Length: 149
View 1 (cartoon, rainbow, N blue to C red):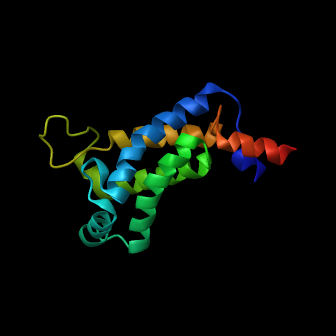
View 2: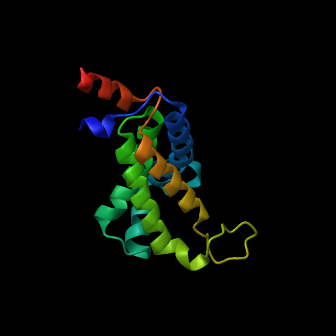
């Protein structure tokens, strides 16, 4: 448990987790709350289970993982768990939806869908957070200090 929360007081962790948390929050809010033009919980569950054929538990975990994982990253609470969850979600998104469309995003509307370059960036940032932890001003750091006492 100690290693799970352990992190340094460096800037790397906070920069990575705030960046990833701020980028992922709107995606999670679209899926859970319907904000930013999203379908909300019911619409997203329907899309994932009916159109993509995902089991309901996987669809639920994706929605919850993106929304609460982004909040966890922003606060630095359960940073490694949130980062690991986002890696799994992004690998699933690549294999289920984005791989056939190639690497690049659909910048000019000339593809049938979006490529997977964004997902690789999320995976890279999340992998770095798995290695470093939440860093400066993270709840994980406070928890680790209490465990070490």
